Every structure is written in C-alpha cells, then in structure tokens.
Length: 127
Image 1: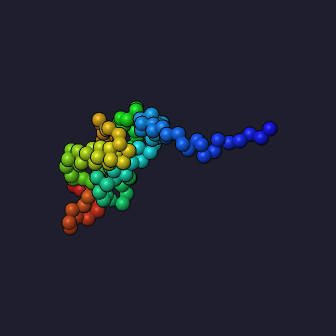
Image 2 (image 1 turned 180 degrees about the horizontal axis):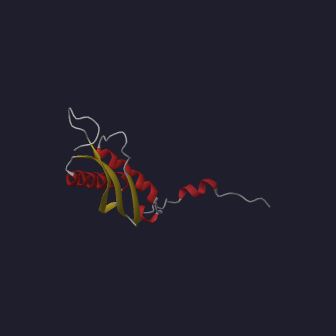
Image 3 (image 1 turned 90 degrees about the vertical axis):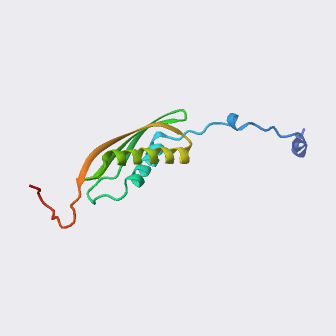
C-alpha cells in the first residue's frame, strides 16, 4: 500500500492567526542590555582625556524592566550632578528605544575625576 499525502488539500483550510503575545518570547540577555547602556553612557559623557576609561554598566533584567548601574569617569572641573543626570536620561532613552524595556533607575557611579589643565597651565602639581 502506498501512502498519499494530502498535499494541496491542506492549503484549502483557513490559516490560523496566532496573536503576537502567544507566538513565543524574546529574551534579551542582561549583558546585551549592559552593552547598550555602556554605549549610551559613553555618548552622554562625550570626549574625555586619553587616560580615562570607557563607561561600563551592569544590568539586572526582570521581565521587561532593566535596573542599570553605570560606572563613569569624568573630567574635572565640571558640574558632576548635571553630567550624571545627562547620563541617566540618555541611558533610559537608548535602552527604551533599542530593546523596549522600562528603566526605572539608573545608578551613576563616578569612579574617577580627571583634572583638565586650563589654558596656559602646565601639567604638574598645583600649589
């Protein structure tokens, strides 16, 4: 006996449309969100002295919510509070736009301040 496939007869039945929320899930790894947060912090901080380290981030994701901690180095003197607010805002915006997650908190930890020599000042000790 030879088995015969239903073939084209299967195409006659209506297609079942599955709502998007029931098709499956997408999981974005914490380290991916951390990479995006680090890049966003780098964009917000701007140019720094050559010996400054790049911003880094650690992230904990629970469902669609990302809790972010960013480590930055800043030039000094500057308005540290304003720069940290700028980093927070930019990280929330970029993570939300790129991965669609809510970011209720961004902790900005300033690891180091880099003294920027003013015009006419040499590199060296200040008395």
